[in-house]
Picture 1 (cartoon, rainbow, N blue to C red):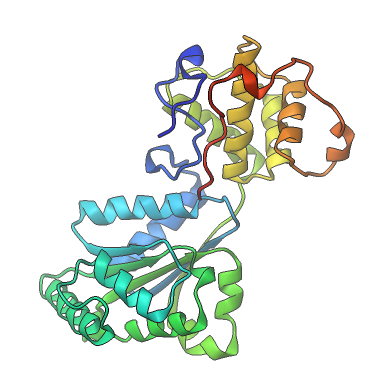
Picture 2: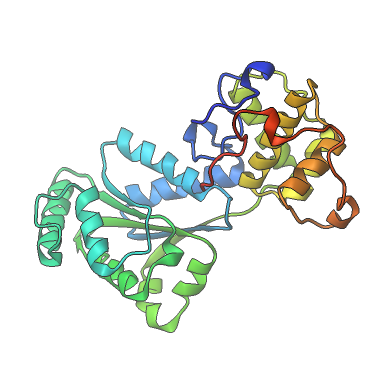
Length: 304
């Protein structure tokens, strides 16, 4: 995890607003708890196809990381495909690699035989196997068809392979296409992640600050938290970006609390748009802070 330049100043043990998907920082709001519970239930009950959707930055990959931790703890065999822009041949090669199948990984036939053997072995032990595909909205039609066919692997007790497709709302629209109606009919469970509400945004920020080592957070006032919600539209990744940069600004000014003026500057630097944003357009830093003041950027690399 990237170290924030303000950690020591605020007493953090780690960066509270890193945008990398870290299950330790999962905000357990009712919708996130429900989504994770549904994913686990779908896997344990051998339901087959499960779809998880949400807008960019709503925490889908973090949710999948939590699921991976659960599968590891229960010793389930699983494969996690994070690069969805693949051909069918590349797809099967990636499946073979992630399941660690002992076969010619460049041969679809060999991969299918080896995968079927693995699934039967798992079923005989009372376990199941899971295939997770992130960024599934980018999958080509022929790859989606191959995934549908993998869903046919089953015995009398249920599906041998649980398949989770995660992606942006475009995935739902893609699955509604007439040529994918057979796949759509096999989806038995759908989960969705929505932007946070104002109260959830405040709880999200508070939870991350406490988790990082600030037991009584006062750096963001209720007024600032309300504005963070409006300007982020409740998207967790954008909340992280805003808060991270606000803390950098406060650190640079040797302040322990943030202000609306700081927030205006940060939002302009991040090129954010929100209802009423024209009111602050054209404002510039009142603090004379430039990137030369720091040895490294505060902005983490992009990730879901």
